[in-house]
Image 1 (cartoon, rainbow, N blue to C red):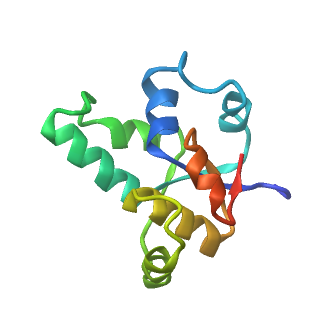
Image 2 (image 1 turned 60 degrees about the vertical axis):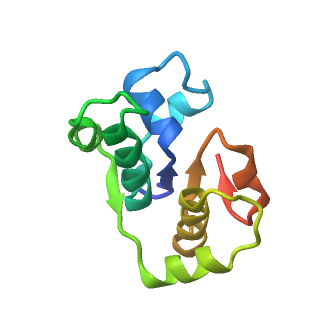
Image 3 (image 1 turned 90 degrees about the horizontal axis):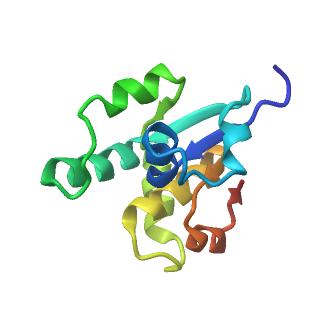
Length: 126
């Protein structure tokens, strides 16, 4: 299992991979099918649930069971993640995306995202 990467999946990539594979960027299909470990941040769960419950994002309540069934793990928010997110340069106004950037930096993860603004942080993006 040498060489496995830890990949942090943002909300768009998660939703597209589960429900709208035609929207998933082609470069991510082989990555998601690899032996790399995939993670979903609690921040992503929070963001998606806010939008799902309000009706802005029509997704089934079973999304998290489905994500787990395909092997995604959950990344909790640690104090060091929160502190870094609060102190990152204001490249991105979205607090959820800032948290993903902070988590990836602290944990040495690569982010799977369609959001080009994330690339402005010193973080690996696949």
